[in-house]
Amino acid sequence: MASLRTDEAETHLVSRSVPVSAPSFRAVLRAADAPRTVWSAPDEATVVGSGAAATVTADGPNRFDRVREAAEDLFSSGDVHAGTEAARPRLFGGFAFHADSADGSPWEDFPGARFVFPRVQVTYADNGTWLTVNAVGPDADADAVEERLATERERIASLPDPGPVADPPGVVDRRRTTARDDWNASVNAAVERIRDGDLRKVVLAQALEADLETDLSIPDVLERLGDSYPECYRFLVEPEPEADRPQASFFGATPERLVSLRGRTVETDALAGTTGRGETPAEDEWLARELLGDEKNVHEHALVAETIRDQLSPFASSVNAPERRVKRLATVQHLWTPITATLARNEHVLSLVEALHPTPAVGGLPPAKALETIRETEPFDRGWYASPVGWIDAAGYGSFAVALRSAVVRGATATLFAGVGIVSDSDPDGEWDEVQLKYRALLDELERR
Image (cartoon, rainbow, N blue to C red; front, top):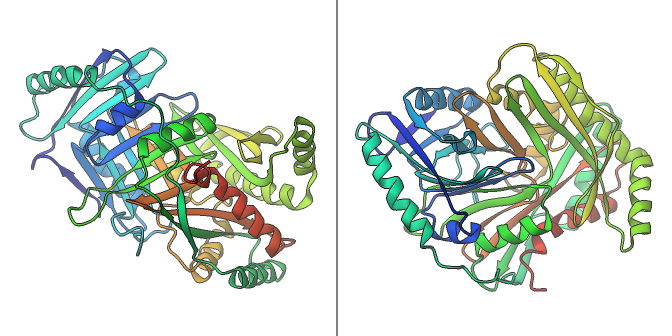
């Protein structure tokens, strides 16, 4: 069952927004209260959230429905003057990969689902920058919120210049959770199951623990990721702080959109099949052409695209998927098919999130057999890695990404995650190399240059 925890005992929502001169992203995030929130996506506003006026949590296989019900209860009590659509009240958060809660380090503070309604929100939109103050509880009234809005406006305007972006902290030690021999055995076992017809595809992941020279600055690493991966979805999710240990932060810059919904228009991506980047434009183009023609990668990608279309069909009056193309990122290139659909009726975005998660790009086929294989094979809990992260609003619209190229950091310890799709002709050595390539997105932002 979901729980809705607010500052007060009774649910009543008040939200007010005002335009402000654009403050530094890093200055705002550095001054934000825990739990902090960041959402930044292509063609969307960038949002920095501070604190929690309300928190929605849920566990178990019904966590999508429970979060939706709690969100609807929260938003139904709303007294909202947003000023602009981009600054409207939203819940930010996500889900664990598996139906049960994450288990063990580094996921101790991450439940099966958790969404935060920020107390203070700064939104960087096409039509300017907006400051929003939210309050929830029996004492939440417009006058108090507007007074807080004036105070926060002055505080935001007086934030000090954060100075130049700090260099990466440096990595002093690494520990793999999967030994090379164990990896080879797992991939070979998965390939055998696929050739026997028990599976069509399964995604196997690895975790890499890194000890850092100094504590990681989240504002600086997210700024660097934004510079390196402007076409990706940047996110930051934090649980409530614990007095006896450093704050945990789950963050990343993922190339994969899970789903976005506005009105009856749905957008999603099939992203599967990977190669590296070339050292010259000619080599880069050669690698892209090779990827487009590679039988193993094309087969893996086709499984993902076909399944996403099938998963959307029960909801949609039409589904459109153009020919696959190559999506280039700083360190890798992926096969990519953007998929759009028109819904046959109004739906809540979480209904689509539940239908699509996990896509074959992060789980496998058939889904139940793939999840069983992942649980039996991986020597760690995925937690929120490869899970849906994003936001929902009062209309039931929202935007979610798949939490890839991600890490959990607590103080000077970071745990990175990366995975690969295993199909009938997968080779353990090649798949190992692809995992290491995918680690580079975050390792490059941790290691000294």
